[in-house]
Image 1 (tube, helix red, strand yellow):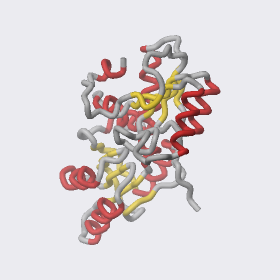
Image 2: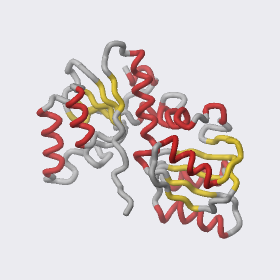
Image 3: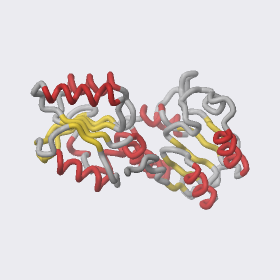
Image 4: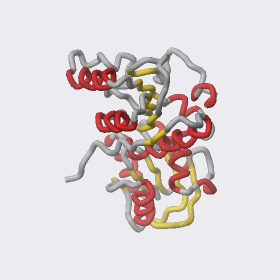
Length: 252
């Protein structure tokens, strides 16, 4: 149903496949989340939900052989056993949820931030002028993120924002800066030797550009909350719950 509604055409390269379980089972309840962590699986069991819709890999790789690529991993084996013992199917909604217009993940973030009226391009927004410090505060509050990383001066004035949640990669991130010329680029994660160093050098050369790094999981989580809200009227009577998988990293 999701594939049909989003207009996504299945192909051999898609990652939107069942990662564990049985595609022919009767669905009793759905959980949406970024990652099917052990904690999320236990919460799904408590909810008696037998379908978990994730955005990112369940077994730590985007490869087709994601359950076997490590060789013998008892972490993967125990996780798979937990799913199988509780008759839970995991399906990944990645390519399809990025295909829908507007992009399902980005739209979820925009809804969370209240930026729906600020579109100035596909990934660009003109927000009321603010400081980098205040924008960081807004992002932390509205997206429930405890810590962010930045490259920039907290007093820099911000109006034009480019938003790339998730892990688009250095080429996409840097070409967005070059082509869209935002005051700040907000991303999920970076390769530190790519985009972070590019912004540092650009600033040293006098360019007015800052970088905010949200963290991959936290940057796309609102998009998986949105898929739960999007599904509910299409599947009336079926319990659908969003569970935040959270940030795997701690600050010390």
